[in-house]
Amino acid sequence: MTSPAVDVGSQETDSKLNARLASDQPTIEKICAALVAQLKKYGFDNKADALAQPMVNGELRKDPYDGAESLYAEWRSANGDLLGHVMIHDSGQLYAEFDIVAPHPTDKRWFIESITAWGSAEAIKTELQNLAALT
Image 1 (tube, helix red, strand yellow):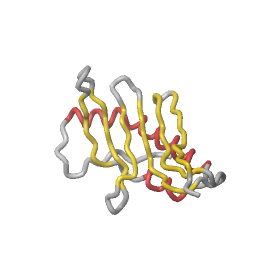
Image 2: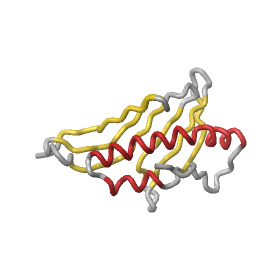
Image 3: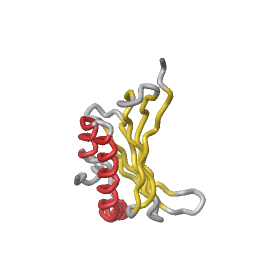
Image 4: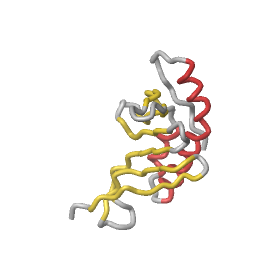
């Protein structure tokens, strides 16, 4: 699955952010593919469509400890609701979270809050974030 580039909309962008968006685009595509695979595995194909939309609110965030910059961007619904986010650090380490908010399809003891992805572009791991279901 190919994810469109991060859409920074009307925000003023500088060359540093644009360069980072371009260099991290292959990693963003791998993150999206890993999340989509997990969504499809559990039957949430309809939620995967949001990952094909451009990410928004791209920005570089500076770590106060070491000064390294991380790329941050969000997935939002057509109504502007936050669906998830991704953070890619200078080191190549990444973290993404995408909201599911639905009952677990095979185990009614659980409710799925989100799917997370972490690791690096070469080794992305994903897992469901489950909460005990109200019974």
